[in-house]
Length: 211
Ligand code: ADP
Ligand code: 5GP
Picture 1 (cartoon, rainbow, N blue to C red):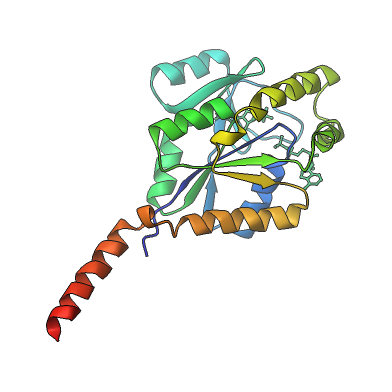
Picture 2: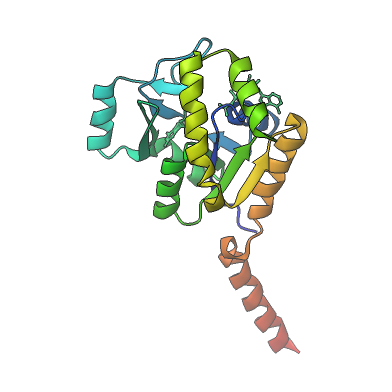
């Protein structure tokens, strides 16, 4: 069967566990997936490294990337710019990897518009209380920022219906495997296997003719 890489967008409320899930998925299946590294104007959090979690750049640099059309999409999220550089994504898809963009909803919808075959996954915690608990527990933001992220979550919840699948991140282990199963199942969709269908149809015709 065809093994073209699939473009996957993973969105979800801040604190739902997307970053944790992605890290685990990539470490279990390093040959299958590639995670796109976004550019952002927000400050790095403790432990984040330039070029690994994000390319941390200035507003000026970001606006230059926009002008040069080097981004697949970009959006503003709680006062900062975030965007997906084109080059890396194209290379990884060509190499047969399933490429994951971990981006917010405005960006997700722009990607879907530009590339309709994109698979859209939305990660949620099992309930709203758990989201607040995780945001507070992560300890990386002030209460002010946590509040704006909870407000943003209310807006984002309105868009969940645009996604192909909801992925409930309750037990991390189970969630990682579920996500892998969904993505690998996606490779079997008939519209992603045009070449295979064409070959088998032609072979059937040929064999029929031989009798
Ligand atoms: P996001 O990338 O969506 O903002 P993170 O991956 O940073 O979220 O996770 C937010 C917090 O929740 C972190 O402290 C992380 O360790 C924790 N977390 C992630 N997944 C789970 C889970 N399944 N159960 C409990 N805690 C989790
Ligand atoms: P954080 O600051 O928590 O790392 O990310 C904030 C939000 O920005 C998250 O919802 C994350 O998915 C989103 N994000 C990260 N990179 C991009 C990107 O390249 N484009 C868009 N549109 N959103 C992004």
